[in-house]
Length: 418
Image 1 (spheres, one colour):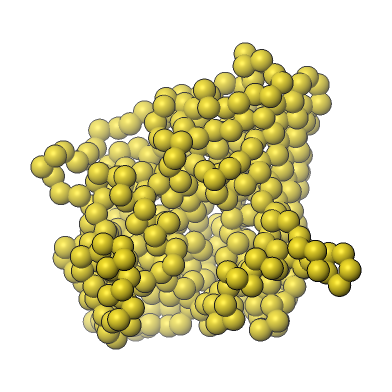
Image 2 (cartoon, one colour):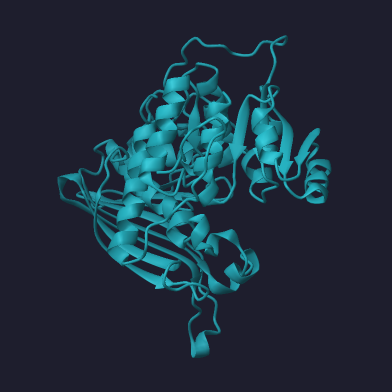
């Protein structure tokens, strides 16, 4: 699979507060499209099936699919028949698989081209391997797997079968992320010195988002804050610095245990890293930032900032996770005027301001399946080394490694497990 490709952003959408447009670093050209199998009016759409009636699927796939003329979501699998039927009716999905073998039946369906896998982390490996063995492309929620070895097995099988697997790190595909990467790597502010990323939710918010039985809190399903929100922090750190193929050294990690399972599940994690060329980085991720003031009754603010310190200034990227809703890219050179950019389209005009990160991701995924060059891509090496870093974070923090349940493929003589 091809490497991660920095794609251009729409310079016309990048607002400058105090620096004249001519003084700002201009966007580069977007990568050229290669000839592929673009759909014509008579060719079939890519048919997607969803594993599980997942809460994330409407934003991650169903809504983006409505504006993509080469995508049809045709099936959902849910072991609970009533829940699956309600989900299908609500979202206009024509086919429902239910019962104990619902996932098996969807994966085996010859009328499905792509499996979207938003199952709990610990089930990513099994059901992605099953989908690949059945000849399906896979759009796979992050993190890809519980371990780096599982990720290696997935991409090895995908290569063998000439299928596409993409870790759904959707924020990478938005033009704002591409623009930050471009600024940092352009040389405009010199070499990178350090990166600081803070991604956290106030405890008052997390109480409404995550019930006590949430799969994120279950060790046997590879739960933990680092496996949920921490992957974003690691991804943005490596992507904007161009080190996405490097399993960077984890120099320290300190966790705050989740009250439901403090010895195995992290509620929060602070980690530091040594990147190439003496660059340092630190990430702080927290599901439930405590309140402050008397008795902690004043809620904390949401933290969504990635800051890059360079020899000649700083770049602060606010809302690196969901930049469509709102974001800002503040460029503060040590010499000269500061500016703020907001970027929603690529430099050649492709994309729409209304497109979510998931919509940009879907565009890239379909392009890859159809044999075209995506505007941006997350390749196997990026995903595998990301999992290696997450493993190192947990080890440094003194927490046990994440695990996946063993399973056996039909017809196999052994158990497929990493």
